[in-house]
Length: 363
Ligand SMILES: *[C@@H]1O[C@H](CO)[C@@H](O)[C@H](O)[C@H]1NC(C)=O
Ligand SMILES: *[C@@H]1O[C@H](CO)[C@@H](O)[C@H](O)[C@H]1NC(C)=O
Ligand SMILES: *[C@@H]1O[C@H](CO)[C@@H](O)[C@H](O)[C@H]1NC(C)=O
Ligand SMILES: *[C@@H]1O[C@H](CO)[C@@H](O)[C@H](O)[C@H]1NC(C)=O
Figure 1 (cartoon, helix red, strand yellow):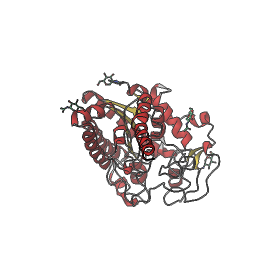
Figure 2: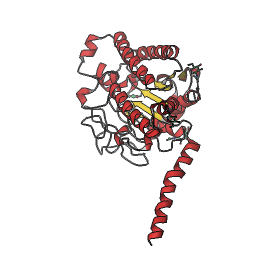
Figure 3: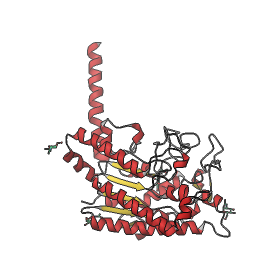
Figure 4: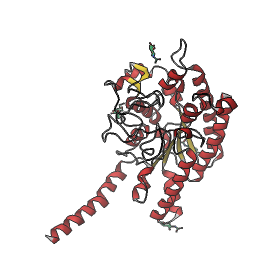
């Protein structure tokens, strides 16, 4: 009896210790993935925070294999789908889940709903984890990685091979600059000077990431925020499908972000930053391509104060025919479409200078 139990335990340990690693290493196209970002990338980091910006209740996750989980969509989000394309079948865990185990070597998701490039963005909606804090959390995990691998040199070597994805800025516009009632930010800054201020700060943050050994970095540009149901509700357009002045402001930021990516690649030795043209991918005729029938209204019943789904509220049954699940966030089908074009560009303008499939092959 005792011997059998012992054998079982030994077999179990061998199974856990050897088999998954062999499988994982055979399939993974990069050793590790570290997503940074806002609610488009969050996979549960806000669940334990005191904030209005949470998605840890039904109907969020209605199409997700494990149900409600904190993702701001009905199913998988962009980092999940990208992770799957890279051979990480279960994605990478939220940083909230804590480090300490060897899983930190495969990557951690730092993204937080409402998070901005600016620390003050979304603060009035409660706690979130802005980009500056996400970078600090990453530094803590780098310490753990160095401990696990034995020294900093080994940690740095690993960190240079990882894929980093960053999706920032959407909240700085939606929850800050274009929030109503009129914000001080909008009074003090023109769209041009606000974009400039964000890019200045973002430049420092992305350089910090580089200094923490990140080399392969995919930076996602802003979506056409003037088309999200939230802005259509706050600024009803007259005779146009989207709020044009918001899309103009977004394009101003994106143009500066492309220049920043070019600048970082030129000035930081060995850096491979790439820009993902989320705006372009989500413009044009993508809705027709996907069979989307409702591009301008949310699938779930929303609370008009927060723009998020009402807890246990009504939800559409034909979720694959909607662009947006709530007033801000893409449905799984559109997240999947965006990610597939970020990974393998369909047109020259989908990614600059390279798509993610090419990025991960950089030496
Ligand atoms: C760091 O650790 C690796 C093994 O993980 C070892 O090969 C290497 O010699 C160590 N380097 C230093 C500087 O201690
Ligand atoms: C990565 O950056 C180097 C310069 O640092 C450049 O020569 C190379 O073409 C880049 N590779 C990719 C895939 O972008
Ligand atoms: C969505 O688009 C349809 C068709 O163009 C239009 O009739 C409807 O008013 C729009 N809804 C919103 C919320 O903008
Ligand atoms: C994403 O789209 C591809 C086809 O383009 C499909 O094979 C895959 O199942 C989709 N994944 C999800 C999560 O919808």
